Length: 77
Image (cartoon, rainbow, N blue to C red; front, side, top):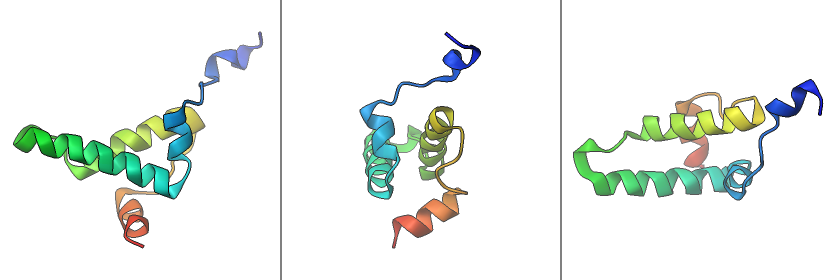
C-alpha cells in the first residue's frame, strides 16, 4: 500500500449522513436530545456542533460549516 493508506477513513453510515444538510441536522438533534436528558451536566449546543464538525473534518479534511453561527442560520432555513 502507498504512503497515503493511513489517511483513508472508512465512510460509515453516520459519516455519509453528515454529508447532507438534513443528515447533519438530524445527528445534531439526536445528540442534543441525549444531552438534554442529562440535565445541567450535558454539553452545550456549541459543544455538540463542534464535536460533529470535528468528526466531519477528520473524515473529509475540510469543515462542513464555516462556524456554529453559519450552521444555526442554515439549520433554521
